[in-house]
Image 1 (cartoon, rainbow, N blue to C red):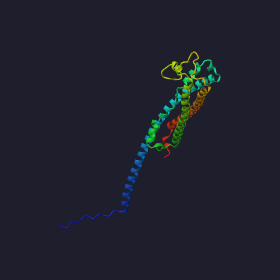
Image 2: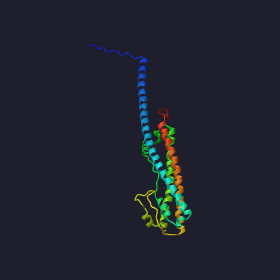
Image 3: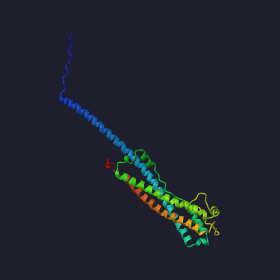
Image 4: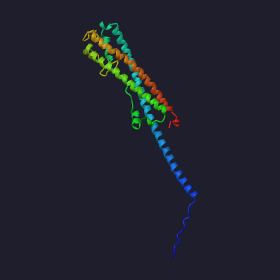
Length: 251
């Protein structure tokens, strides 16, 4: 028995072209859809990181505000000690000299909050941010923190040497007797009574102590300047992030 196989009719060129265009369109649309999805996910992640950075900066500003208050108190203490030293009233009544010299043993340093910044770095750094203006503002903020920390290091050098020089002049028994509270702050000490003596009346040792005091006093003003500068940059960065238009990303 003879079997006749059906004849395949060749497709026309237009049919091949149509199939190709449909396949091409499907692949292209899939590609664009995937890109849009990735773009959306990156945008969401970017927003999350920026929100964390805003929280970091707000915590920094709170610390700066606290530090600025305490540093202004410190500046006032330094003014009092300077006056006592310059008019030599400590020779008649050393109590206020002891009191103010001891109060300066307390320090209030800026320590940044960087949880959001660290997460951004671990995720790929500033390449995760598409707004160039925000990138520049973040870089400026980071640089200002680095500068502030450097000046704090210089201040701490004077501070440590000031404390060491105190031991050559001030009587520890007087400091202990009038220490006041167990937790030190600028107001915890008491003013010694009865014109207590120094462990040494050597003017060279007193001069050493007051030289370190002078450097520490001036460093306090420098650090305050950079803390105020950092505060302003932080406020500007927060405003920039919160007011940014997501439609104007630099892609």
